[in-house]
Image (cartoon, rainbow, N blue to C red; front, top):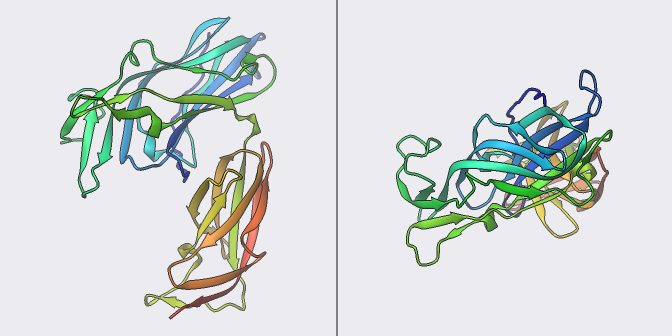
Length: 314
């Protein structure tokens, strides 16, 4: 088996539930790839939550199936999963494997720690080892983070039924590692946490993206809020899915007077789009919000709005 290049990028998203997402891009061979083989790429992403840090060292990623076990990555990567969202961490890029049917991805995690908000302005760190190399300088470890068998047998992620055949069509898998359900206190053991990963995979070919854009109508005079002029950078785009889950992304300057927010890796379907503004600000837009935006498979859709009025309530 030939391995192609590896890269590590970053992703960050605003998702209501806390989770970690791993993307596996399983694509057909092309260019210099030999006949009868396929290429595999793995990207890592995450969504933030109440935990202040969730750092792991991924030391190996394997692809397992009827064609045997193929090592996709064995160069350790240490990352804080809570810093990744709205972009991707590419752990494997174009690893060449024989065409065939594969059932699992296997992630070997050799160490990690979590930092828990104590709710009183302090936090506590629970690590797989007091000498874990991924700990920040000067960190005081409060207790143990148990990671049973993860460094030996690894975390096995089952690929969706019927979608693990690598031949000539491109396939991308979305693997959701739910942090909130994967870490918990050890019953009866003071000062210890345990990691029991809760992970599910789904076919990632069906996802898309949405860019929400907002600009100010030339007739609008922006009011002053707290002695500073109100700008579109003070607005946040809010996306609501059919299951009532929400994502919020602050608007950033897109140039030419427009600001935008990008929502990535969305399941196809209809979403409700609205905006929030600083306290005391009321506003209107065209089209009127909440508005419906449709996301299509494999495409990025743009939903454009114009701010038609903005006032400050005394």
